[in-house]
Amino acid sequence: MKTITCAFIMIIFITKIHSQIYEINFAGSGASTIVDSVLVENLTQCTDTTISGNDTLSLRSTTGITHLIFEENNSLNIYPNPMIESCIMDFKANFDGKTEITIYEITGKTILILNEILTKGIHKYSINGLGCGIYTVEIKSEKYYYTKKIISSDIAVHKPNIKHIETALDFDKKNKTLNTIKNIRSVSNMQYNTGDILKLTGKSGNYRTVSMLIPTNDQTVTFNFVNCTDADGNHYAVVQIGTQIWMAENLKTTSYRNNDPIPYIAVDTSWFNLSTGAYCYYNHDINNYFIYGNLYNWFTVYDIRNIAPVGWHVPSDSEWTTLTTYLGGISLAGAKLKKNCSTLWHSPNIGATNETGFTGLPGSYRDISGPFDYIGHAGFWWSSTEHDIVTAGFWQISYGYLNVNTGDGTKTGGLSVRCVMD
Image (cartoon, rainbow, N blue to C red):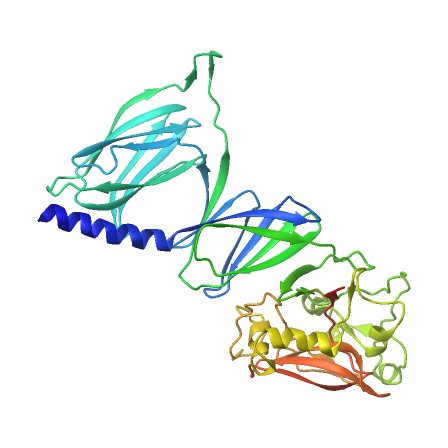
C-alpha cells in the first residue's frame, strides 16, 4: 500500500514539475540569422535580465536570476533512476576547482550540500537514504553547471548520504588524448509563474526585434530582424503587432532622408509662427531626448523629404485604427500599448500591460504657443492624415485610462512620432 501511495505522489509531482519549467532557445531570420543577445523582461513580475543569444532561457519557480554553464551532452548520469535504496551519479568536471553538490526536495528544501575540490575528469558518487519522492541534484562550479531529477521509491527511512567513489580521466583511446567538452551553452534561470508576460528583445548587430511571449511549453523564439535606421544613423527596435510591424520606440531623427537638417526651435514665439517643419525635445532637456525621442510639428511629418527611415512611413489614421482594432478596439487598446514596470508614467498607470511590446511612453507634447505640458501623464503621436488646413490626426494614451484617444491636433503642436513598416 505504501509503494502505491509513493508512486501516485511521484506522478503528481512529475506533472507539476513539468508544467513549471520551460526552456526557450533563440534564432534569427530576415536580415540576420545570428542573435547576439536577448533582453528578457518579465512584465508581470517586473524583472529583467540580458543573456547571450546562444543561451537557453530556463523559466522556473526559483528565486532571482542566475547565469550558469550547462552541458548539452550527457555529462551528468544518474543510475538506476528511479532508485530504491541507492544510485550512482557521475559527471564530468571541465576544470580544477571548487564544486558544490546540492540535493533538494520537491518543496525546495535542501537535503544535502557537499563542497569538494575536484580535479578535471569524471567523478563518481554514490547517493543513498533518499525517501520516497522527487529530488533535484544540482552541481555547480564557477565553470560548469548540471542539474537532474532523482526519483526515489524507497519507503524506508534512512539518513541521506552522498559519497565520492572515484575519479577517472576522460581519455580518448583512439587518439590518445583527453576528450574535450562539446556543445557548452549557458542556461539562464528566471523566475516565472504560469501566465506571466515576457517581452524578449533580440539584438543582432544594429538590428533589434521585440517578441512577446506567454510560454506554455519548450520552444524556439525566432526574431525577424529588419532594418529601421533613420537619416542620423539611429537604429530602432521593432515589433510585429497583428499584421503590422511598428517601431517599438519614438523617432529621434534630426534630419530628413536626404540629410537636410530639421530646424530645432527653442523660442516659443518662433515655434508658434511656424508653417514649416521643426523639432525639439521636451523642456529642452537632452535627457528627455534619450528617453522619449523628439517632438515634431506636423509640417515635419508632411514634408516630402520624409522623416521616416527608409522602408517605413508615418502611419495614417486608418493604420492607427488597424492597430487599435486588432487590440480589441479603441476602448481597450491603450492599456496594451502602455509601458508598465516603469516610474516614467504617473501613478496609477491604469491597466498597463504592454502586452503588445509597443512600449508607449508619456512623452507629452509641446503646445502650439510653445510651452510644454503633461510629461508623465500622456503620450501623443502624429498621424499622417490631414484633417483640414489647420489640424491633422493625433493618437493619445494616458496614465488614467484604458483607452486610446484620437482627434484633431493643431499642426503647430509638437508631438511624438512612431513609424510603421511599408
